[in-house]
Length: 119
Length: 134
Image 1 (cartoon, each protein chain N blue to C red):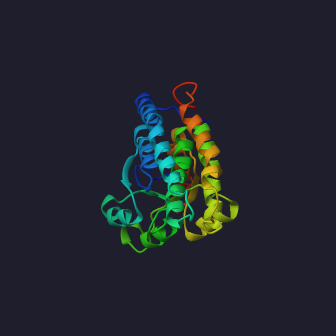
Image 2 (cartoon, rainbow over the protein chains, first blue to last red; image 1 turned 90 degrees about the vertical axis):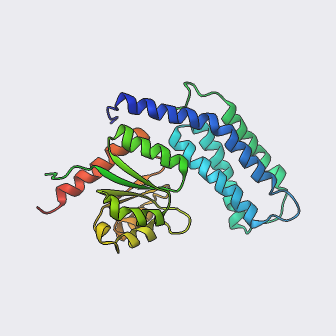
Image 3 (cartoon, rainbow over the protein chains, first blue to last red; image 1 turned 135 degrees about the horizontal axis):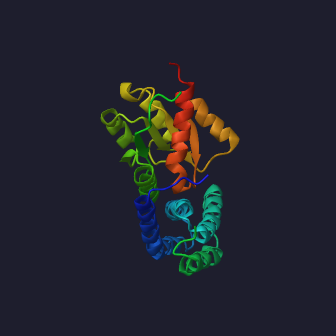
């Protein structure tokens, strides 16, 4: 059952959602920068954890703010990073491994939601 | 019957984005008085003076997590019996059972619908008040 919401409260919530949506490209850039630090011969656990932390936060908050496509892309990347952490941060071609996830995230952020946000 | 009205909520959440939307949902939409804390330590410091009716507590926080914070809150006279509701994405039945065994009133699953958050807390509060003696 949907509650009857005070008009001002709903407007304030929409303003928060708009601001969050406008800030999404900055968050994705931060994730790209963190992912770039994963490339190289040895995958440092602290770099992996930093990237995971950013993606985990985006995955959680985007769902609450109603950006479902962003949530899906972030959740897929989060799962990949979590499995790398569980495996003890193995060496590998992380640039190629993460590229499709980052591309999906960029697409999700740049795709205009139907009505300002996806709810 | 319900004898007390839910008015004051201590919101404990480390993620600023979720903090902002939960605060908005509870105060602007729910009409509740909300004190926002960014960590368990912050909550332990501020809860005695704020005297919340209910504490909405994130489970996964750096440093002291939600379950640890709940135990610490129970050591403070002002919050010894204050109802605590956990917020978490981990809501498998065995996980929810564990939170309740620790003494939480209930669990709000993440992601939650901001428009419904205050109403859900009020439902939990009403259940609690209904079963309270006297």
